[in-house]
Amino acid sequence: MAKNLEISLLLDFYGDMLTEKQREVIEYYYNDDLSLSEIADNEGITRQGVRDSIKRAEFQLLDMEERLGLARRFREMRSGLEKISEAAAQIKDYNEHFIYSHELEDHTALILDIAQKLCE
Image 1: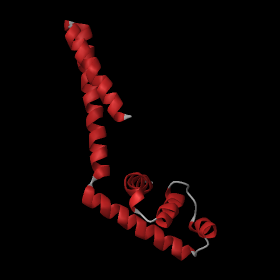
Image 2: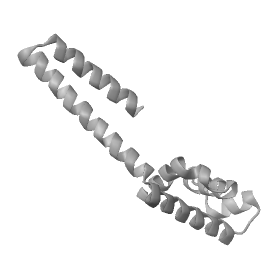
Image 3: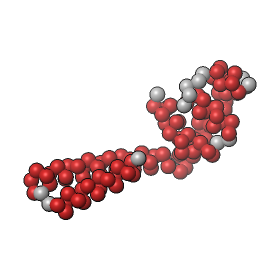
Image 4: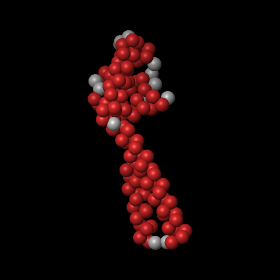
């Protein structure tokens, strides 16, 4: 299952760099959950042809990620933004319960708003 999610994510980042046929076949397989036989019937090619196309596309997606690292960077940024949001929420909570500062309240609200917008 983890491989399916990884390939789907890579397809979002690098799918336009594949040939149209490779992109269609790999989307059918990973995103639409069609079997090799179903894809072969839809595309008018053999199951082996579908499998070969999927394997080539997987290799290309993984190679592009290894070289460019866009999906890895996206996950790192998302994780960092979640940690920033958690820290800002803790500061906001501490401010509300112990030392209330209107300025601190405004800054934490701004941080939380920006982090939320960047995660969308």
